[in-house]
Image (cartoon, rainbow, N blue to C red; front, side):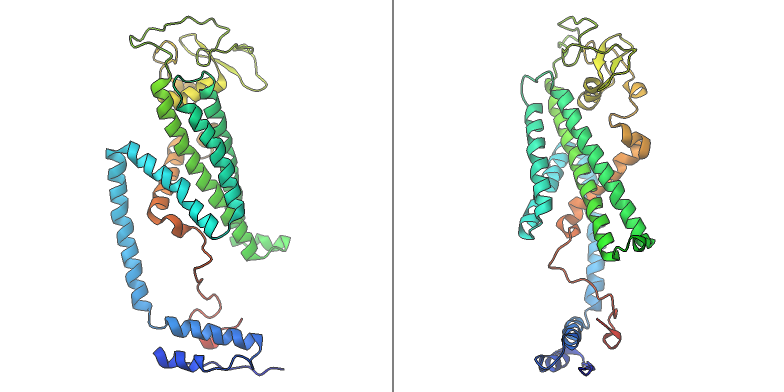
Length: 341
């Protein structure tokens, strides 16, 4: 049986020299681990003051940057949205390639390819009649997936904190990694799809062209035609549709469900897309994203997503798990003589 090596080191450079003189070839793997661990603590001894200064600088930077970001968003919302969207979309790509996170990279490429196609369709002039439905369908799908992923990740984290993972014989570190990964995926793609949806809405609202400059419609549509996409309506207002329902506004114009919900995102105003008559769309659709209103609330959900955006802009890639970061010792908390592998 190998003897246990008692590691005692002095302070400063002398302690590091003592550890460097230890012959590692005659030690067991456990003893080698203890020596390496002692070297790490000797190297970082006396850095407490520097760490405190770093924390104070970080807090001050967060406060000042938060104030600047709020002012930027209030004064120049368009540039703020474009810059934050570009950063959230492109910056993670660098770290995924560098750290070989192939799973995230594959999902990112698939999301970017489809979103780029949808964005391309939304920025075309003249706008295709089916584009508002396409935009709403795609971003609603991404929202539902990201929301469900975030909920599952949050539940996994909470179950791990309460120790319920032991009932399924799952290691705490594996359960926590699984939950945090899902939570990150849900928040990241949830914020990203919201910003892309708003950008597409801004472009389409300027070219939607369902009414003339004088405010009077230039075409007449029958009750069997959707006033948004111009396509035939096959489901009556009083009937329950299999795929989507048909809605009639107070001005008696009818729409496909996805079309009018898309108009709520695109138009951003409480008017009929065809005749511009004032219509309280919020009473008919409390939220263009149905689950968000029922689970989080419209205001709460927007505040949560805005907060996540600000945190990402401030901290950026530091929030991503990095293989180059050295985690704190969970065994000794700085007391080398008590540390066990």
